[in-house]
Image 1 (spheres, rainbow, N blue to C red):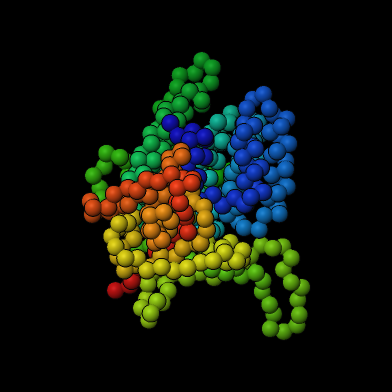
Image 2 (cartoon, rainbow, N blue to C red):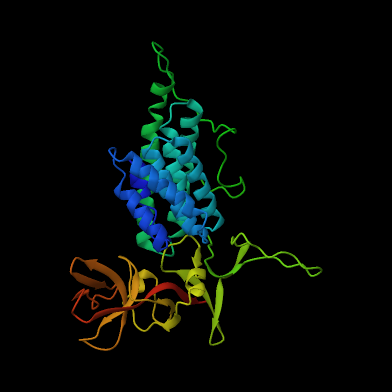
Length: 385
């Protein structure tokens, strides 16, 4: 069953956390105090995080903080606040086209509402669970030509979500039957207009999920990824002067879905999962160095990185489990390699993802062995034929 905690753990499944240092510390403290015997401490930390959200500049970080607040509020049985914060987070994720996180936020809100006593709440919650499962089916279809491992994970996750929904639908009779009443057969579940609205307009709505047993092929949908490079911070009149934007909330973003390298056009595809938008504004505004490297070899071709492609790399000395990194060992040679980063306690594995069996995992001591990380690959540029 995909309950609240299970779905919350999916939030950064294919994407690094968007939290800054301050918010990460508070969210970690919240997680450490999610115990029944610490409600006062949990409430204090929750209040601090809610204040911090207003000071956070980036919407993806705001959304992740809101989800952490909702998690704490759900534990404190403040369902109305949890539902409100999850709705805000889902809106921010959708606005930034972070489809995976958007779907997770919808599922979490659906689960909160489903666990309420009022019929309009749990019926609305069930409708949101269905919407989230449809989005996961769409993400599986999107990854058909992008990442076969992600596609397999999304298909398995959406199948389990559908099973969870079917289990909950089986409980509708018990929840709606009064004392002494005979349960009635469950009919179609309405979505009360007063409480729930589809997260997509009718003309954008994803197709209904395909049951796991269906042999119907997936749709190969065209999909565009973009690099989000600059914020549109304000508008300026061509006439008289105006006061500058003091809200620190961007009006929009400049995005690129194609780049030109040596007079040849390349399309953008992500290497860190973040919906369809690869957010570079945080790296650019912080002054972090970014480089583009040309790929030689086929050791990562099953990760959609082919010989002759270019990768966009954020130069940094740390990475998260599962990142594709530029790394190496100074004691072996001075050259770095592009591999999947897998820390294993005191050791680290650099994993190839290739159809070529000659490429083998490389294992090194994490410390005192000369191992280094030079950067994390964010996107791959692929030639447009």
